[in-house]
Structure formats: structure tokens, C-alpha cells
Amino acid sequence: MLTREHVRAHWWRVALVAAAIAVVPFARNDPFAAVFGLLPVLVWAFSPGSPWTGAVLVALLAWFVVPRELDATGPWVPAAIEVYWLYPLVAAVAWAALERRHFGRPTAVALTGFAVTCGVLVTGWQAAPGDEGVYPGPPALRISQDIDCGSGGCWRVLTATGDRAPEVVAGYLTAKNFTRNDIAAVPRFCRTVGLLVTHRTCARVRPLGPALARVEWYVD
Image (cartoon, helix red, strand yellow):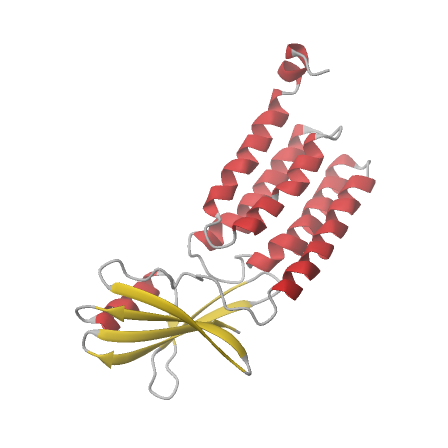
């Protein structure tokens, strides 16, 4: 039975679980990944583990979720898919190393992560990309969006209308840490994240006039 004395004795577990839950709202583009990332913390919370282990798990969750959602890029920024398999694996190793006991639960967490990763990959096969920092686009422009598909998969399309639309869209993507790399005279902006699995998003900005631009983005 949960008593007041029990809550007082384990307040740090509640605090660390609350800290982990506070990370979830940062995941605007991949909320399910962040919710799944709570699994190691919740399993730890109902285990005879130390507060140091819980703090490490929460810190790892924040690292796997927050930088990407703040539009950071680079090889030190985890990709969303890595939240499903790499984060549980790293969390399990850290848990086992810190506790040096109770290896069953960390192992179960890691195996669950791999199983969920397989499910995510299957359900997302050839699906259109998410917002990826491209949508909703510059607030100063009128934006509409659509999805196109071909033999190579699906991509999303954003149509921006307004004063100097091509230049405004280009500035918007640059501010989101996309790097310009034109192909065949068509402006292309890309950014990459991922520790072990590279996730590269590219957006082609096709100027259709001084006040009209078409943006097509896809994931390599």
C-alpha cells in the first residue's frame, strides 16, 4: 500500500519521472519517440535502483530528444529513430554499469527498443516525411502543403506565396540550420543528424516567381 511515508522516502523517484515527462513536450516532430523514451525511466522507477541511475537515464533522454527538436544538427545530435533502439541500449548499458545487478530489466528494455524499432521502420516504409523543420514555413507567407509519391517513395510539398517568397523561404531554412547545396541550379537545403544512423533531410526550393515558391522535401 502506498503511504505518505513511502512517498516521502522515494520522492526522488517521483521527481526524476516528472523531469523525464517534462522532456516529452519538446518532441514536436516525433512525440511518439519521446513518449517511448520514458520506458527506461518508468521501468527504473519501479526497480530497486539508485537516484544516480535515474538521473543518468533522464539526462540521456534529454540528449536524445531536445537538441534535434531545437533544430540542432551534426553527428552529435541523435536521429529520431535512434530514440527507439540506441537510447534503450545506451540506457541499459549505463543502468547495468551503475547498478551492477538486476541485469534482467535493463536487458528487457534494450530488447523492447529493438522490437519497437522494427515496427516503426515497417509502418513508416515509403511514408511521406514529417515536418522535419520545413513545415509550417515562414509565418510571413501564405502556406499550403501536399504530398507527392513516385517510384522512389513519397515527399512533401509546400507552396509559399507572398512578397519575396523564394528568398524568405531560403532564409527560413538557413535559420533552421539547413545548409545550401544547389543541384542543377535549383536551390537545395539539407541538414543531417544521427549518432550511428544518419538522417538527412533535404528541401528543394523552386522559385516560381518573385512571390511564389514551391518547396519539396524528402529524407535520404
